Length: 184
Image (cartoon, rainbow, N blue to C red):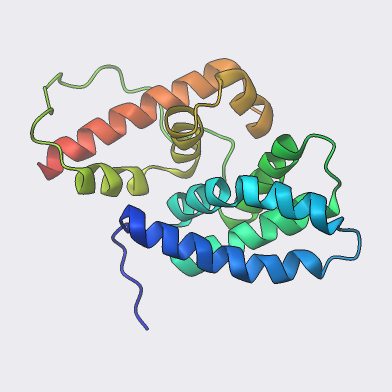
């Protein structure tokens, strides 16, 4: 079975998320230290967010399912004082095992040529551009612009300075702009 490199639409992501949810539901109950009702509720609140972020980081359905499952297993094994924070930390730990993150993969490039890309940009171009971002920039971009995390929280989770989080976001936006401009 061949998996396409092209990101899926919202409906496909929902189907994949429900498949991953069913798979992980059985795995969650297999952990001896899991408080089933509490962890089930925590899982339901966070599964779509984690699967979506995993899919964007891996650009592969199977890898995203595995990354999501491992994230919840790690988070639940570590306790749940602050569930969202614990799950985010577990996700970062799993992503670090998947690909290197933490150091910025781009150097500051200054302002590129300013061009208006509105009207020419299509959603598929934006999705393809985000998938092509280096790991750190992609993660910061997803956490800040898509999920609404503050730089303070992102920098704490990734173990980088606030300024580096802001720089990574700026670089990600510039890279996305340039990639979309080349595709249009």
